[in-house]
Amino acid sequence: MTERKARVGTGMSGSADPMAEAGAAMGGFLSDLRAFRAEIKTALQQQDDRMTMLSAKTATYARPPLSAAAETEAPHAKAFNAYLRTGDDDGLRGLTLEGKALSTTVAGDGGYLVDPQTADQIRSMLFATSSLRSIASIVNVDAVSYDVLIDRSEVGTGWATETAAQAETATPQIERISIRLHELSAMPKASQRLLDDSAFDVEGWLAGKIATRFIRAEAAAFVNGDGVDKPKGFLLPPKVPNASWAWGSLGYVPTGAASDFAATNSADCIINLIYSLSADYRANATFVMNSKTAGAVRKMKDADGRFLWLDGLAAQEPARLMGYRVLIAEDMPDIAANAYAIAFGDFGAGYTIAERPDLRLLRDPFSAKPNVLFYATKRVGGDVTDYAAIKLLRIAVS
Image (cartoon, rainbow, N blue to C red; front, side, top):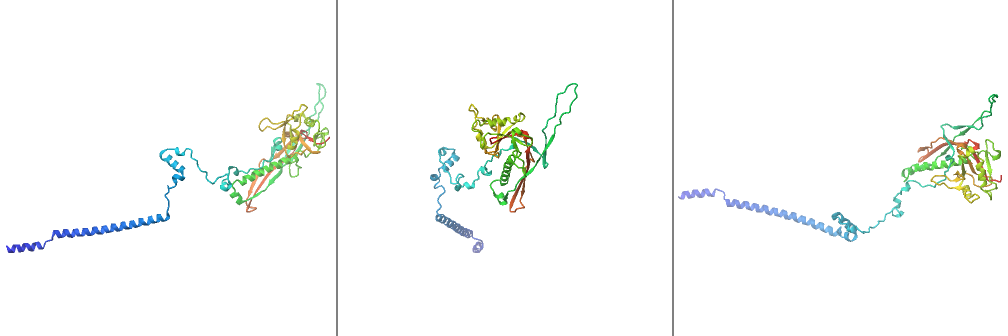
């Protein structure tokens, strides 16, 4: 018995104690839990420190809330926000909006920054460009001159009987008038920087200015040109009294006063001028005068007090003097002693303009660096081709 107890006691002392093992495991778990709690506490403390630092920075800059002044200083924003969220537009009704400082009407407030639409085109003075082109005969040529064949004589005729011998009649003669073409040119220049940086089309503006100047130069030459490197004007041929007119000259009618129209019956000279022209030409005849002369003629009245001048009744219709149209050409002479102030005739038959129709514009960026040259040329000529188709009014007693 004693021996068995000894064996039993020896066997129990050699085996593991469950309670001890459970206690050891519990102790390890509690140790790990305390370490985890310490880590969590450390992390929370670090997070709290960071939040404290951010709060301190926010307090340092003292940034106000974004919406602090929205409701009091921006009622339009509040009303617009309400309209977007709920569709309520009551706040927008009657709301006065503030105009900001920059505007196009005041240069200092931004007007220099805004290019008005009219700045794209330069507004230039309107020059009077009424030209003989509107009533003369115009031909386009590709040569250096243009020849006009004139038949100014008549074929001889006579009465014949059945049995009488037929007599020879006169043969018409043909003459030739040669109209030479002359070159009209211009060569302005502009810097390349101006062409690149300008707010409008400088090249187009220069081309338009050249064309306008050419029109004015042509208009002057068609009236007063001397034929030296320019067209011959219709006032260039010799003038003789209409009673002694001959081919190669222009006939004139006097006004009856030395330096103006006659004091009494001033319109009589206009009537005489009209009927000095052959009936064949009167059907398409036109008066040509400048504005000053037109101002004086417009005051003329007939015996019943009616004005002889009649303004055009429709748009673009020319004024008429005693039923004939009037062309205002500023290059005609003013009313002065011995001046030929008014011309009357069929200019379609009496004056011919020969030209090359194109206006050539050459852009040369190389010859005058850093400037760009614009070389424009036009070739045109003109001359009287029927001396019987044009009559003049001379400011003279006879």
